[in-house]
Image (cartoon, rainbow, N blue to C red; front, top):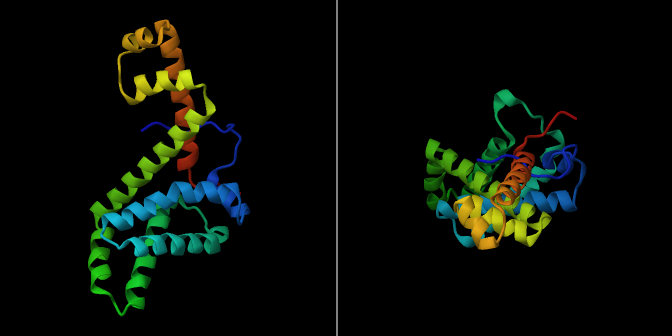
Length: 197
């Protein structure tokens, strides 16, 4: 997968920013990045619509209350792994509050399996890539986005794109290279764990 997006390279990570903000743009970005992951994971494991929405709320409340004390330890895993564990814990809490709801309990073992972990990681990567692509699109000219979309997303040959857009092939390669670099930067920024403060 491609790497990080471009918000200047000195821009603090999303996770570092949510440690400092209790609301605002960093939290909105965090919710838009992780909300679809949590929600899709819950729905993939047959949680009801309202349960999936409640789960998102519970997980975000937990993050908000614990993020200031969160210490990143690479040997223990990534932030998204911690968020996965928080999500599973909140689902267990839901099951207990419903007198050990058998439907919820039956899905917990599937969620905690290696397949469940890989589904979580895949959903996270999809959400990061989607957010990064949206950011790149918002930062560039529409013509450049169309060239990039055709070459990078649709995998069309550069010669075909150059002819279709009435551009020199060198321009197509330059646009693709620049926007791919921005996409890589944004993916990296959205994926990074909390750095030491």
